[in-house]
Length: 251
Image (tube, rainbow, N blue to C red; front, side):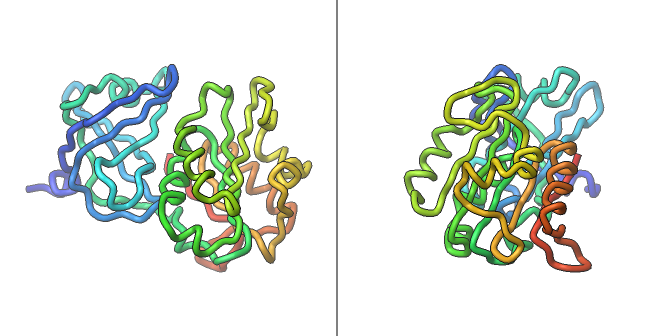
């Protein structure tokens, strides 16, 4: 048996819900190794004798089965487009061992935990929010979810459930960039950090002494939001030193 064979196991699709025209929730029954909330693994299909691979953050909480992924079908994405077509009972390859350092063990305890995500980049945060750890370590959790259109919101019912269960600790702040929607911020995360809109709407002041940030989403947001936070005196967490900004880009 080759390394390729041992790294991958064959899972079976149990559900594929189309949440929007391009977003879908894919659930796969597979005996993957135990993982930590915030980690990712890779999905693959054999297309025209080639194994096409793409990493995806795990949305389900550790120990939950089946394993759930929040996916976006890009117009030129051959794998995402094929994953979107899968039906219950269809096979799909999944990498057995999850990876990644976008986990709470990388984050120091603080008064506030800011989770900043765009699109399907909110998946690792939804996994974390379904575990006890963040509620035990942080007084306030501010979940900032940025999308292009309000119809792109995924997992609204799950977010509402979290809000009901943790009303005193949890604050949900949605951002919509391409339309104006009541009850949301019109704009982008980096600009709203710089101009103070996020702090005003969330009702919490960002402070290097009291705040930790976790970022996940498109590379442009990661770069610009990190720069905006650094302008406010925050430092990126790294192997050289502990900071207040934790992020990971895997493609």
